[in-house]
Length: 352
Image (cartoon, rainbow, N blue to C red):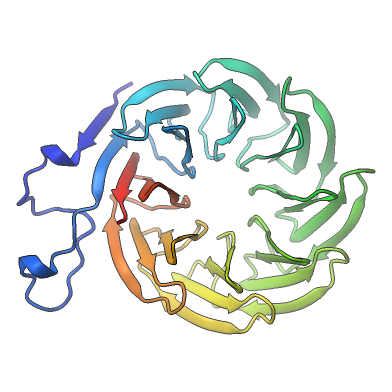
């Protein structure tokens, strides 16, 4: 297996293929030049479509080359990789001193942060979904089943069967588990008695992780609609129609909810009413969730571009171009954006 680290400092200043440069339409003199943002990049042997987990100076990602990687957050150097038996599309999650992730080899892994295996649990189907961890339990979908495992030993405590594939992480509260399924339903399950509280039917697949705002659950469907549902009862409070399917999980920020769709658009809605605040068109289909830090919204698209937008207006601050689709969400830590791309790279960008 072949790996490569690329440092910006080794690049010639006059390189004609600088990523992230945006034309202003005017004479691009030095005073108007977009600052170079790439700090380093790391190349795997396959696509990287998982949202990076960044903890204690390490960046953890999975790749469809079957590996989970641990990189140095400062320079991108590989510390270790762990080989699974299948492509890794499940976002790694760090809780305490353990990393949890799924693989298309139908296994869920618990790894120590030095890359050694603590346990594995074999499911009945490929694990596309990302896990959620709470109260000593890991909640993760595989095939049409939501599994609930003990985090320390990986033993199954209970599960929930749905009518379709589960492709996204659940949302966990003190009393409920909320998870979408490709059978068109969003499910609410009581954690105490493990019974179905309610399910809400959309017109097509629900492959987004619901966002929770007070008593409101917010999620999209590939039926091209976005929903606001009472988390207690499952009653619809509002819905909003778009022109494309939605597989982008929403983000809530200061009374607004943000998400992308398959027609290249980012939508901003009033979280209470579902009224549109703004809508902008990017360069490609949007699958990842927006990340908002310090009043800047970061989101990638299938053209390979990462966009930094004003969350109040949708105006573009800057862009950075990778070599293939960016389907994962950006992770922002200490003024650095960590970006996973289907070109096989993980990028670290200076966002100051």
